[in-house]
Image (cartoon, rainbow, N blue to C red; front, side, top):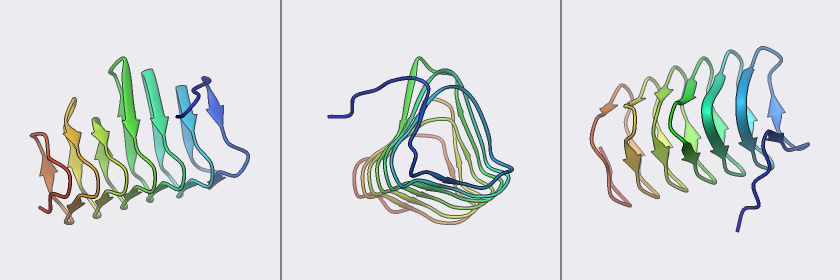
Length: 124
C-alpha cells in the first residue's frame, strides 16, 4: 500500500529541467517526466512508480484526489484530468476528460478523446 506524503517527488524521478510541478503531488519511484510536461493539482495528485509522462503533456487534478497508476505510459501532447489505472498506455495526443476513470491495462490510440469511464483491459 502506498503511504502518501504530500508533496513528494522520489529521488529516483527523472524529470527534464522544463517540467513544471505545482500543488500537492506525490510522484513515485523511477518515473520519467519528459520536456515541457506540466503537473498541476488543486487537490491531491498521485503518480505511481515507473510511470512515464511524454513531452508537452498536461496532467491536471482539480478533484480532491486523482491517481495515475503504476507502470503507466502517457504519450506526448496528452491532456489528462481523470484517473488512469496501472499498466495503461495512452498514445500521443490523447485527452482524458475531467473526472473520467480509465481502468487497468487499457490501450488508448493516438488522438482519442476519452469522455466516459473505461473498464480494465479496454482498447480504443
